[in-house]
Image: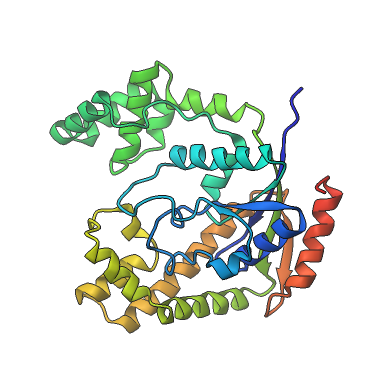
Length: 316
């Protein structure tokens, strides 16, 4: 039986110190960091995504940061394939992968080694379905999906046009419904054994305060200038990158549709809401070893705590 490789996973809501802990653990266990963040993949967006600087990396190699142009749209499948190649390369060189980030869906997909269904490329079938959607509307396509995959159709709303198209595309291309595919994937053993270090604050108010300070720091570091640079580069306003928290609001500032003060408050609110969603996702995972901070993170103590857990779990 093949041995499932152990990988270190540093998780937690935004602004809890994942970057610093990831670097410290990579140094401790001769590892390299793989970012698992859906927005840090984009070039020219370092400020608003809190991508680590060269100084913060402290000489530790980092992967999956600034690897895509912001006008590209990356699916979970594309991210997983690229990140998995990084993990495999790190393992081949005898190093320990340290996965760091807050995009739970991407991390789960990478660890499980999800065998993504076909239909992730721009194909004649996809263009045909998009044309049908334009002509016939989502109601007709959802009814068609209901006939072949009622379970999937029941989970979708008429506004979920991309997911309706995706489900029909998978079925028409492979003969297997996306429900059948997902069930088969869940039954497969995981590709990697994730050893989870979770970071959070004991008091929720301390997390909220730290998020607010991070937003203020981003503004001071030039978030508005970064947004204006993206506009000058010709980034289409339909690009996925503009949906990232911070960029959407400061695009409105650049357009004159929102004051900077209002944008800052909106970004703080959206960031706090995002942190809550991250925690909801993470709390489903009972394997996480939590390191809980007081008002100010104590990284030496936290590192020792994490090291003890990882060593007892077979990481050396």
